[in-house]
Length: 320
Image 1 (cartoon, rainbow, N blue to C red):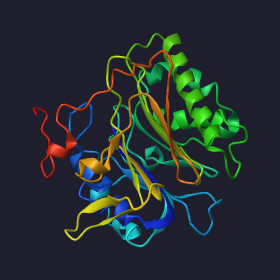
Image 2 (cartoon, rainbow, N blue to C red; image 1 turned 60 degrees about the horizontal axis):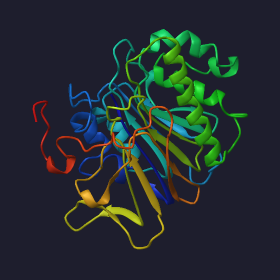
Image 3 (cartoon, rainbow, N blue to C red; image 1 turned 90 degrees about the horizontal axis):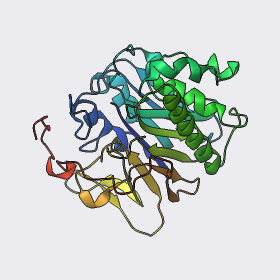
């Protein structure tokens, strides 16, 4: 499985302050992730991508930079992050699933018009439903898909749920409804194909103004892939060169959503509950919606056996 981060802020933020400099940044997670459910390896080295919107042109498509190099070994990512500021950024480090080749076309995030999309997890039994899924996607979206991953085809399915996906902007509830429809259709296709292996669907989508993401599994007795959030007035360095979320007022000026916390300060981070849709509005307000389908089980959520804040500075082994 992969790791991703997205953030939205009222004022532009230097990408390095989110992507490269924090103690458990997304770059650190590319070689030392702590909360992957499979616990096979701590590496996400099969490429990466970062997408951002120009603060001076908020209604223009995002710029997306991808590479098949590991994020920790790409100097261009560090150079870009040290110079670019944006109000809204997606970043993804990839651990390729079996059968999906390593190529730039398979690196997240993907864009379509003003929309941007990324995914952590997998669509179970994807090869059994791929043809049926593709049949639901119109030609203009179908021919926009250049990779072969379950994630990008899920993006295509999401686009199909929108009225005119090339519009400049959408309401956050339009994005919410389309993402929930996407999950419903994926579940229906899996049921029709007789697939009983759970899917992990941590999706994130944005139009440059709102962010909508999910922490979801279609199984009532297992945990979804990890996803955390933090909000406050400013995410900044303290005198010990450690990042922290400052909370100078009740309203949020910045919201971060990440597969794993970017720091080891427990009080700065909240775990998003299993099977929940998380929304950040254009005004940087946060809303959470339970996904109350047949797989909803509010008692299923639980902390990982080794909490992330107890392993600061150590690489977690599979036996811990």
